[in-house]
Image (cartoon, rainbow, N blue to C red):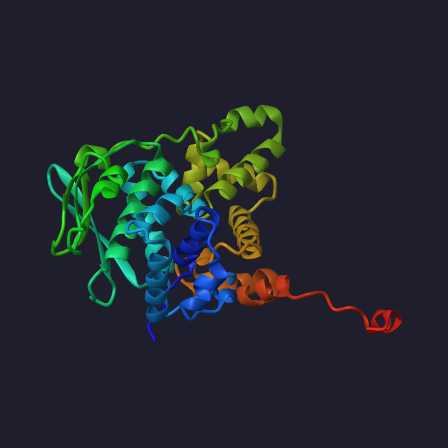
Length: 344
């Protein structure tokens, strides 16, 4: 059976129905023929038939013809916001967001088309099947709203194309996507924005990861420990946001890579060890939560392949990410002597 790579989209639907509409979501899940535990497991997945059943029952229960749009407005992706927000331009933010999305949801893909005046972002199914109305509306709304929020750049779209037929009422679409032309029954599901908006610089002042750094010379005056602490902080903030290199950290500290390497060596600090430690801490922190699948965490920690992440995690902890996560959930076993004493 075809698997949907990540449960996040469907968990967002459940959370919206429960928190915003006050519905009995366990009843909704069971009516769709699904197990509620799937939505608790961050590595859970449902097949295509289950996805269709869940959304069909949700539309029937809520009687909301614009449910996909409303879930997209309600939904938040903190990690994707961080990735997109650390990008230098709106266009780079789109690319970061789409790369992460396709990493944990292998059922859909994004592509880009550039002209002299516009850039188009297209959503397609990986297997070549038609994009459903729900998938098209939610996928493009997620992307548009997420990038605007993450970059704090209030760009608007020039036009929006859907492969699905025109709905009876388009007022909610026009509210969510203000000021752009809508077209239905098109060959692809695609959004277009102006080339100048694509190239617009991202406002970084609102991102914790891009706080002003002390220069290397200023830290030298404060003592060697300041340099080590600042390097660790920069690396920690950049894990998963962009490839970490000695050159990148040196630029943030307004010094050369050679000088930074020399200063770290004087303190018996290995830059590779700093990066490795930051990745380990980030991985363990994310695995303790229930938001991200192991596949998504692989990307967020800066690995291009899950097998490479698993090898690194085994080296760090002596176990695999999956076993580590299961161990966090396992209830503590009471010693036999205590169990006997309590009569259990």
